[in-house]
Amino acid sequence: MKTASPELIALLAGAGQFVMADLYTITLVGGSVLRYSAAPTALSANGYTFALGPKFERSKTKVVIGTQVDELEVRIYTEPTDLVGGVPFLQAAWQGQLDGALLQLERAFMPSYGDTSPGTVILFAGRISDIECTRTGVDLKCRSHLELLNIQMPRRLWQASCTHAFGDAMCQFDRSSMQAIFPAGPGSTPVQIATSVTPSPPSLYIQGSLIGVTGANAGSSRTVASMSGGWVYVKLAFLSPISPGDQFQLLPGCDRTVSTCTNVFNNAIHFGGFPNIPTPETAV
Image (cartoon, rainbow, N blue to C red; front, top):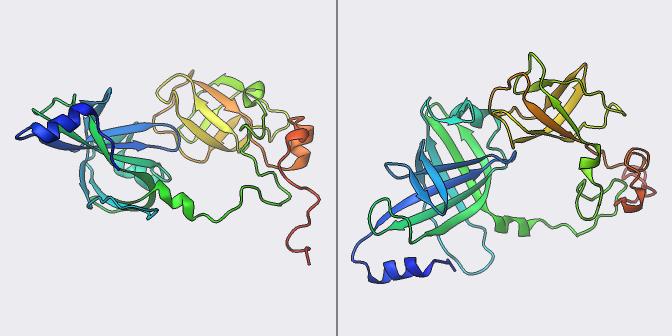
């Protein structure tokens, strides 16, 4: 069942004519949000501005009763002027910036063009599963969140490594207690940032998070791939160029072993694994 505001219900029930427009919201893994209007101009709806960007073509949506996973195919025709941060849209998609992103499709109903006060209806919400880049655009295949019900996995797994998400309610470790904030040094790029931070132990921030505090990448988060020689290397490039002096926050990572949980974080009481279970190769 789709939900709609009383104003929208009244418009659909009584208006002789109205204007419709599709609105796309793409939430990247790092936290950046892209909002695009499929109308001839930019539109404002629900307190957000949907910019006029690339052209969109999509498959039909449907509403079914049950737990069937809905699928949506979206074709995006890009221009060199269509940017994701400071990177052309097609290049950003090729780099993997859209991998695992969330896509929401809304339809705005307007009594007159530009008047979105009656509200919108969400036609589809899901995760981008497949991406194919061509010379002219990007093909996306999206699957609804009901796909998560197909994962046959118990709530807890009996394994040697910890099953908690580092810093969640089960882990209960405060990652900010070991944070480090530093300014980016000269020579920093979207994939490697110069830093004066010397972690102890050296692997403290590996698999952790690097979050932009100031500058063009403020609010964006990336996973730390490695850290050595005064440089922080991230697994996925930041979208915008990095200027010397931009502030970044480092949060620690965890390799999910009991030794790290005990010796580095002093959090063994909340360890979520079973270290005495033998590995599959020796469990005969």
